[in-house]
Image (cartoon, rainbow, N blue to C red; front, side, top):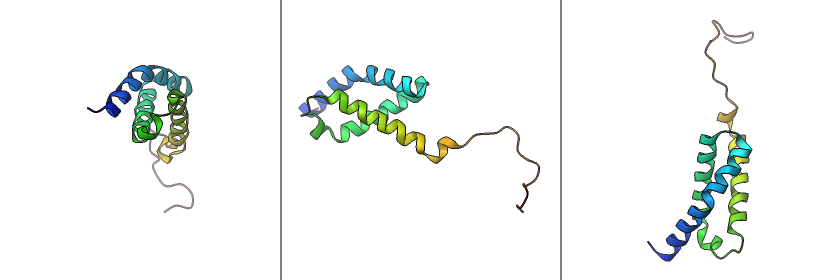
Length: 95
């Protein structure tokens, strides 16, 4: 691993738990919070060459986390609701 990777690993070790707690406070589910943090860290890694020179990397990561939460909540699959009982026939106006 290079210096860039070592710096990112150190950043992840220092910030992953605070990010996970923040994600949990927003979504209320530890498993979803972990997924959100992993997505956030992947986005931060892609921009790491720019981010590593910032003074407030943690604040940048929190901003990415919050935007990730918003993006995930807008996805269509998130609004779908599973159902145990299926209707016997189509509703009015359907064939």
